[in-house]
Amino acid sequence: MGMEVRRRSLEEPYAAWRSEVDRLLDLLDKPGTPRPDFGAIRKAIRDMDLAMRDYMWSVRRVRAGDLLHTTPGERDHGFRPAGPR
Image 1 (cartoon, helix red, strand yellow):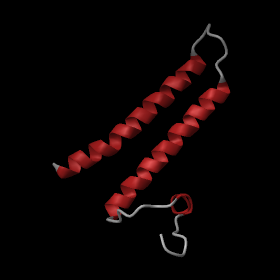
Image 2 (tube, one colour):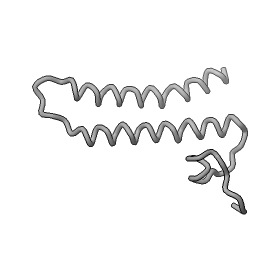
Image 3 (tube, one colour):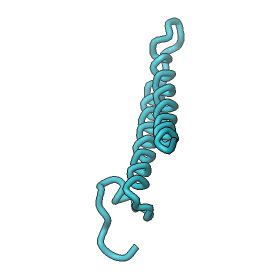
């Protein structure tokens, strides 16, 4: 049961992200509509991708058992800066 809950919690954000990507891609394929704002679509996809990366990073941290606060440098580059936190 525990594994099922964990798997579902990982699949739900991905499913939501994937459905939003599909919705945006459908905007591009819809005939007879004005040309979509590709800049806004690219920004939305980039924002969703960053949110999914942050979520997956937090899941990996929890699974590793390290619940300490991570700094932006650590999140982006995978290391902790020297010195006190």
